[in-house]
Image (cartoon, rainbow, N blue to C red; front, side, top):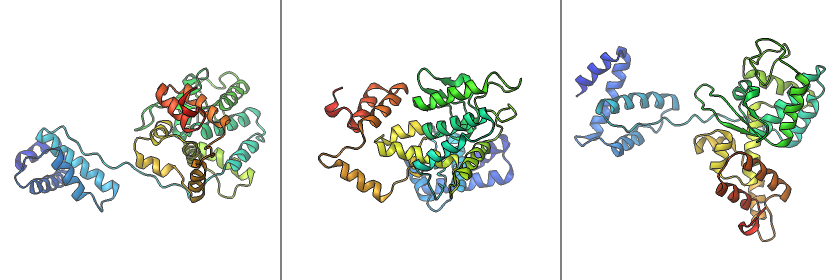
Length: 320
């Protein structure tokens, strides 16, 4: 079997070193099977045996080799590498620091640039958007009537919906009015432009804008887009959104990814337990209805919408 598999790899154009690595893993799987039929359950057991102790990069290469052999055997089962869990910044931005960022953004001497910075900060703080998603947003991607924007595919990420509130929509409208008509012929209809009227070419441009505002605001640990994104996801977690609603909101595909984005502190746990006692309430009614309005505009199913409102205490007993 292995000789035929090697011939298949040669026909597919694999290099000698790659063929050798693929054959070693195929031989290990056959030894693990020990004459038994190879099926999905056996493949998963083999994965659980060889995966511990491997780094994510090495395990990703093993998955490619293992899936190539499974395809040769005619099995539809595939092994997926673990999701990449990025390291989070040690210091987190607090809500009062975010307000200071918004205030200092108005001090930019170029009027429409100041409005751009405010709109960008509010969109980041409201929708937990990634910088790469912001710089690819076009004006046509905004649905101001329904309160969301539809991002475009970016790298290996699929298009998703950015949810935003009325204050963010108003900030975007003010920015677009101050910006006026297209400033250059090649602006491409992009939402956020540079001072010269061109599209932002790099995601680092977003961090540069945030850090400049942070310096003017006197924030010790300079904020980044990642910190704003984590701040918003943590806020919604504390408001009572379920993990799967948070994953949809943030554009995440795995619970392990979500775990890295939510900051859980001992004081937050104690506060949640106190609020669960008789007479306690998770959040105020005003905050609950703001969240309900955002959920209603996001095309979430009615059952999911009502469950979220009930969790916030806005509809006791489940009746409107």
